[in-house]
Every structure is written in C-alpha cells, then in structure tokens.
Length: 115
Length: 524
Image 1 (cartoon, rainbow over the protein chains, first blue to last red):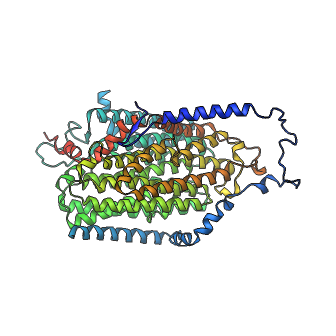
Image 2: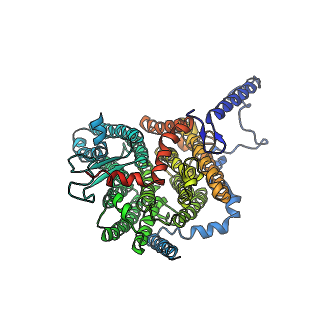
Image 3: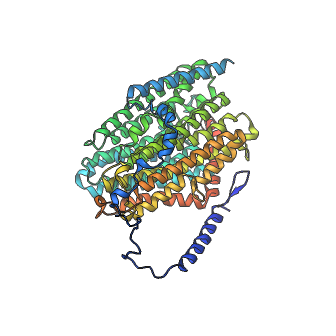
C-alpha cells in the first residue's frame, strides 16, 4: 500500500485518520442539524451581547498580536533578554559569529583528530 | 526520449540560463510573450527533471561530461583523472532537483500577479531564471569549483531579487546583508576548494572522495565548507541575517530562497557524506549537526512566537524547521560507522530518511506559507500583524491555504508534516529520547505561534480599513494551490514518496561508493 508508512516501529496510515475525521464530521453535522431552527439573521439573536454594555467597534474589540501569549513572554522574559541580544541587525556582528563558528568547528575537528 | 534524458542534466541548467538572457529581449517586445517564455521554460525544465529523476531511480546515477565525445566518458582517453567539467546526478541530486523545479515554477506563476504593479519586471524575471540556474547547478555539479560558481550565481541573483522593490529602505538593507553574508560564505567555499586542490590536484568531487586523506588541512577545509553552508541555511547561531533578508523580499522570491537554503544543505550533505564520506570522523561531525540542529529548532521557534511582522515570523519558522533536518541527518551521520544501524531497516537510515523527507515537506508548506504572507501584504499593504484582523471575511482561499500550511508545518495528523516528523521522532528516540522530547515541544510551539498569527490576521470582525478589498489574483491562488496539492499528495501517499524518492536519496548519502565509481569507474 502506497499510503502505509512503515518506519520499523508502529506504522502510519493517513487514510485511517481521514476516514475518522469524515465520520466525526458527519456526527457533528448530524447534531448541528438537530439544533435550534428559529435562528434569524440580522436580528438581536445574532448581535453581540456584553451584559447590556455598548459593544466596542470591530477594531477595538479585536485581540491584536501583541496581546496574545502575554504570560508566556512574561515568564520567559530572562530567556528573551538573552536570546535577543545577538540580534543586533549589524552585519559586522553577523560576520563575527561566522568567524567564531568556523574557528570553533575547525578546532573541534582538529582536536577530535588528535585524540 | 532516451537522447533527451541523456542530455537532460545540462539542458536543465542551460534552458533557464538561455531563457534568462532572452527574457529582457522578449520583454521589450511583449509582456505576455515574456511571461510565456518564463513559465514555458520552467514547465519544460520541470518535465526534464521528473524524467531524469525517474531514470536515476530505474537506471542509476547519470554522469554528464561537458566537451567529451560521449557524455558518460568522465575520464578522457590517456588520462587517469577526470579533468573536464562533470555533472553527476544521483538519488540525492534528483530529489533536490524535483523540489527546486516545483517551487521555482510555483514562484514564477505567483510572481505574475504579485509583482504586476512593479517596474523593472524584465530584470526581475531574468534574475529569477538565473537563480533557478544557480540552484540546479549546485544540485547537479560534480566538481567543487563549479559548486562555488553556481553558489555565487544563486547568491548574487538572490541578493538582487531581495532588493528588487527599491522604494522600500528595508529591502536594500536586506539585500546588502544577504550579499555580504553570501560573499563571505562563497569565499570560504573557494578557500576550502583551494586547500583541497593544492593537495590532490583535482576539483572533481568523486576523485577527491577517493583520494582524500583527512589531513589537518582537510579538517580545516571541512570546517570552512560545513560552516559556510550551515550559515547559508540559517543554522543557529549563524542565522541572524536570515530574517533580515528573507522577510523583505517579494514573497515569491522568499519561497525560492528557502529552497536555496535547501541547496546549501544539499551541498553540506554532499561534503560530509560523499567528499569526506570515507574518512570523516562521523560521530564528531554528527554530534556537531545534532547540537546545532536542536539549537536551531528551539531558538528558531521561540523567536518566531515573539514576532509581529508576518514575514519575519515565517522566516524564524523556516529556521526552526531546518533544525529538524539537521537533527535527523546528524543522527544518521553519528551512527554512520555502524552498518546495522544505517542498513535497510536500521534506525540510523530512518533518521536520515526522516530528515530528508522533512526537506521535501518543508519545500511544500514553507513556500506556501510565505506565499500566504505575501498575499496578506498584497491585500493590506503591511507586514505588521498588529494592523491586521478579520481578513478571512474577504480572503477565503488564502485562509484555507494558510490553514493547510499551518497544520502541515505543525505536524498535525494526517498532514504530510506529521509523516516526516514521526519518522524523525521514532528513530531519534533510539539515539536519545530527550531529542524527541525537544522535537515535540518545538512542534507544540509551532502550532501555538501559527494559531496566534492566524487569530491576529484572519479571525475577528472585519476591520473598517479592509472592507471593500478583494481576494488576491488568480495566479497567486494557483501558485499556492500547486504547493497545497503537493502537500495533499504527500499526505495521502507517504510510503510511495519514501520508497521511490526518500530512501534512494538517503542510500545515496550513506554509501558514497556508487557516486565515486560512476565517475572513476567509467574510464575507457
């Protein structure tokens, strides 16, 4: 079978997953069909309700990229402080990293050759 | 047809080169004719690449000697060493050739609309075709000096294409950085080539692989080659230039630049496994690749989560994904001396296959994601994710294609990204379980960051500034559709791909002898 990937361990067959997804999709569709039928577009039923408060404009209520994962970045602040340091944007620094990387790799290879 | 396949290695390089020089001439007469020339030449080249790859799988390595009475005559009569320029296509070269052919064609189709409003389009397509020439040359060449020459062709045209939109200051800065980094990497490659030529009096990779002694000078040459190519692929900590350059290029070119990174990865593999294959200190070099591969995966993805510029975000993810490839192939290299592990069914071979399979998958979903980033820029006029929102209302095709790319890069079953990642995870686990855990964490962070970008750009109510806009033009959708179709095909038939393409490529790396004997063994 051209779909079954065998790596010497458990096999992987995407067709099984696709069939499962299709079955789950059909089940979801079935339950959705049994849902509320009295739904009317462009009435209060479909408008946003914020406890009676005025609903902010679309541009004000959209969660922007800067606000997502705030806690993640706050927790890893120290890591980001360190990892952002080499990203200076200066090409001289980039070349320095290259020279250092080449020198270290050559030393490792030479020392390993001597051992 | 047989004659065409015999001549195909040189035709695949010569056709885009010829088309590059014809493009400005035809472009002066008719824009439509120029576009037809560009697309037509790339379609024909793609056909030749697929035919050649099929023949390599069936009949073995192709050797093409320029200037010889017969293309297969690698060593001239009366000589004991190969002295002519030789192109050599094995399973690994053919594999990379297929990737380059598909992505460059998709990028050219995408460009038809993406740069439609720009001036200097003749120059753009000339440079694009020169870049295609350089990429194929790097993949097919059989000697070190021409590897340097083709690397330079690809780098110079790439740098000029990054700086193509001259009205933006950051494109000029990005292009400058790319050229400086590429020039230094190219010089190091030339220096290493000189070191080897001075010792062995030959530039031919197969001949050098047979005679190399692994002297101190050879070790220095290996470090120069490895680090130069590693920097061009964006391996951490040599990646710093990568987002600065890739994020400012037209999206179609960024998609192609990803594959030039793959071409440099191919060159690094060719150096480690073929040129030095018989003498290399495999565990040491393997561990160097593993350590830097893990660093590349982790730093790449954590930097990606942090980004607010959609193209820089995509660039850091490209870096992160390249780490998976280094990890898989590094593990294979570390155990190269153990025939049981790198033989058929061994986990060393599977680790390498996983790494190589991931290159193919990455070549489909990463340009697709860059193209969706370009589509966002085309629609909104900005790369800043903080200014985007609610775009799914108008960009339905782009949204669906972005989701396909996102699920694939995150390794979500049943998409193709999962197929290669599961091969890497299972085999690398045998080497060291911690590496698999790092890989899974990186995958989770990848999904998390793409979800963040998806929410920021596509979800939410329609923003007033983007009302009245229209989905991107058809040629951009078609180009993205070609890559998405590639993802779906690989998703459905992973075993077909692995058996027909990935394993031959991995075997070509594991055993350098067929590559060497294809040149040295065909002496009259």
